[in-house]
Amino acid sequence: MRRTLIKSATVISMDDVIGDLSTGDVLVEGSRIADVRPSIDVGSGEAEIIDGTGRIVIPGLINAHMHTWQTGLRGYAANWTLLEYFRRMHAGLATVFRSDDIHIATLVGALNQINCGTTTLVDWCHNNPTPDHTDAAVRGLIESGIRAAFFHGSPKPEPKPGEPHFSEIPHPRREVERLLAGPLADRDGLVTLGLAILGPHYSTLDVAMHDFRLARELKLIASMHQGGGPAKTPGGWEKLIEAGLVGAGINIVHGNDLPDELLDRMVDLGVSFSVTPENEMIQGHGFPITGRLLKRGVRPTIGIDLESVLAGDLFSAARIALSMQRALDNAETRKASGMIPATTTIPVREALRWITTEGARMLGRETQIGSLTPGKLADLVIINASDLNLFPVHDPVATVVMQTSLANIEAVMIGGAWKKRNGRLLVEALESKKELLAQSGRRLVQDIERQGRAA
Image (cartoon, rainbow, N blue to C red; front, top):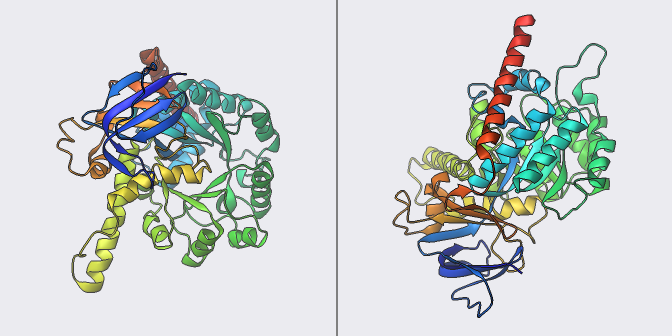
C-alpha cells in the first residue's frame, strides 16, 4: 500500500477533536488519511516523506457551485447583468455549444480548480441538450482527476414556435437513470451524480413537483437557483413544503430575495444553501445571504458560479463572502449606535468552514471529506507559508483565509494521489489542452456573432 508522510507542518485539520497543530504530521495510506498528530513514526516500512517545514496543510477545498461548461468564455460576460446573462448566454452562446466544447471547458475548468486548491467540485451543468453533451462533461471531470458531483441540469434556450418553454419541461428521468446505470453508478465514486433542477422559481408547479419527487425517489441531491426576478410559480415553495418534499437533500443556490419566514422554514427543514458572493453582487442578485443564515444557526457553502465573469479562486470567494458580511454587520452597528463595532462579528475560521466542512455536509459526504480526519479520504492542500506574501505567519487560519492565493498552492492530493507537486499540475499535454480551449472559445464567439449578423 502506498504511504505518504507529511512531517513537521502546520496542520489545520478542521476536525474539532484534532484541532490545529503548530507542528504536526499527516500520514496517508492508500486513498485515506491514516493519522494526524505530532511526530508520527512510520517505522521501517516504505513511505514517501514530505518535509512540511514552513508549510500549512489544510483539507482540500470544496467548490459548491460552478458552471464549468463556461470555462472557454472566461471574462466574456464580465460586464453583463443577470438579465443580459440570461439573454446572451442561455438564449445565445449556449445554443452553439458542441459536445467537444463542453468536454474541453469542463476538463480545463476542473484542472484549474485543482490548481487553485479545490479537490471537490460541484459542476452544475445546465447546457446539455443531448446525451453527447452530458457524456462529454462527465468525461471531462473524470479525465481531470478531480473529485466531483456532477449536477445534471437542462438547457434554457428561447423556445422555437410550437415548442414548450423550458419551465414546462420536467427533468428527464430516462437520462438520469442512464447515468446512474452507467458512468455515475458508483455513489461513492470519484464523480457522483446530483440533479440541477429548475425549482419553483424557474418552473411551473407541476414540473417542480415532478423534479422534487424524482430526486427523492432516486436519493439524489436536488439543487436549484433561487433568484433573478419574479418567480415562475408564486407560492410554489409553500406547496412543495405542504407536500413534504422539502428537507435534507434540497440545495438552494443564491436565495437573495427569500423572505424571512420562508427562510426560517427552509432552515428548520434542513435545506442547504450555496452562495456565490462575488457573482451575486456583480450581476445584480443582491447581497449574499451569509449573515441571514448565520443568524439562524446554519452556515453557507461557497461557490464560484461563473468563470465567464470572474476568477475561479475559491479562497477569494470565501474572503469576499466574509468581507461583505462583516461590512454589512459593521454598517448595521454604526447605524444603530453611531459606533464602530467593538469586535468583529465573524472570525476567519468560519470562512474556512464554508469551503471545507460545510461543502462536505451539503453533499452528504461529511464522513468522507472536508477535514483531515483519520479514516477520511486523503484530499488535502499544502500551502507554502514561506512565500513572501504569507511570511511571517502569526495566525495560520488568518493566513489561509485572508492572504493565500493560487501562487501559494504548492501541492494538492486527491484520494491519496498527488495532482499538483512543487507548484506544478501533474497533467500531460496541458498546453495542447489550453489551445483546444482557446479554439473552442473563439469558435463559440464567432458562431454567435455570425448568427447575430444573419438575424
